[in-house]
Amino acid sequence: MPRDGDDALHSISEVARCFGLSVATLRYYDDLGLLPPAGRRGNVRHYGRRELRRLALIQHLHHGGMLSLADTAAALGERGPDGVRRPAGRAVLTGAIELIEERVADLRAAQHRLEHLLTCPTDDPVRECTLLREELDRNVAQALDG
Image (cartoon, rainbow, N blue to C red; front, side, top):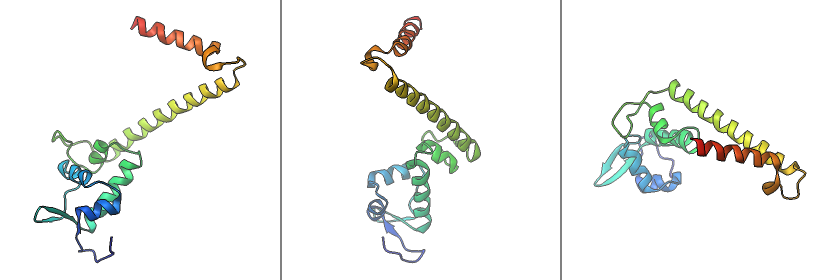
């Protein structure tokens, strides 16, 4: 994308190409009210520096795995697809941190299970590990009781 002045407008196809997105994604962001264009020339959406900075923020928050698209909109103080204004700012960020902490805990537990299987003395730990079999039996019993 050429580095014109702050008032330069860039077409939707140019923005999509430069930011590694599809035109459909940018249209979807517009439909959600997350990234309205600065203007239109005919039927073509155009974006200025302000919108590009906002798109970079959306990518940073959403594509970095920090926030869902709905939470990204909420953090930016936008309305959700249902038109309801979402709680913004710190509440969204706090909730996202809690979800990440849960995912990290789940991944650590999975790592410990895999490490155990690597050190299990059986010939075929995935099929023969006593601890794994006991855990699976508990899961089956819980599923049948629930």
